[in-house]
Structures are given as structure tokens and as C-alpha cells.
Length: 162
Image (cartoon, rainbow, N blue to C red; front, top):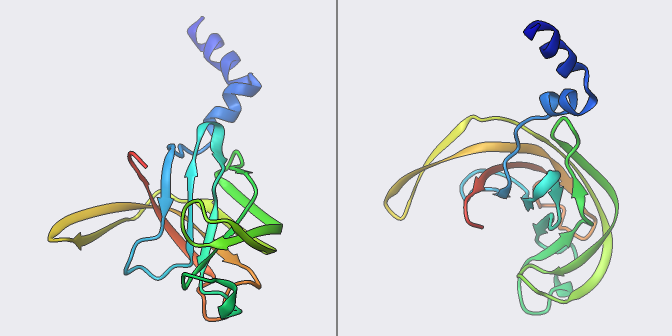
């Protein structure tokens, strides 16, 4: 009887989806200083929502950013697929690269990423030995970013409490 119940449960659509989805924990994902990567960062929220994905970079036109060196290219709210992937190609908002910065223009953004489970990266920060797990890899680009900006990204996390 238990075998029949288990096989029945696996045929339910919700259960099949849950078993095929990677375990992407909620939290903040970003690149690490010292690891070559485009400046992509975002939070993963309930049901795989990415409400604040940004690509931080040097502007292609240096005078676009009035008071800071870098700009942020903001994607609309994205959602992880059932396989832990996300992608977007379309219009995006440009701000200076700090929280709450006002919109200074529009551009396009092309980004594609996928969830990975490791490896763990060991590093030292302020004399402490730390480690972060590699969580996402992909590519990102925008014509608003200088051509010297990296296009590949490697993100770590989630960072708890952010």
C-alpha cells in the first residue's frame, strides 16, 4: 500500500515540480571582491522572485553619472525558472550605483544566469578566514556599460540577514 501511495504522490504535478526545482535559498547573492565577475547582485525572495537585480558597471559615457563613478542598470522583477535559471533582454532603468538613487536614464539589459551548487570559495577578510558557496553563473551586458566592464558573472551566497 505504501508503494502505491508514493508512486501516486510523484505523479501529482505540484510534487513533480518541487522535486525538479533546485534548492535556491532566499537571501542576497553578489560577487566577491577579488573574484573576477561582472557586478551583478540581487535578492531571492519567496517563490524565486528577483525583485532588485542590478548590473553595476562603469558608464560607457562617463558624464552620465554625476556624483559617483559607477552606474546601476536595473532589470524589472524577474523569476527563477523551475530549473534555477533566469534570463532577460529588454529595457532597463539606469541610476547611479547606490541605494535609492534617482533614475538618470534608460537603456537595454541582456542577462542570463543559472544556479550552481558550489564550489566553496575560501578567502580572508579583515583577518578572518571566511567561505562562500558559488551559487549563480552567467553573463550580463548593457550598452550603458563601458566596454571594459566584465560580461561574465559568478555570484556567491546567500548572505544571511541582507
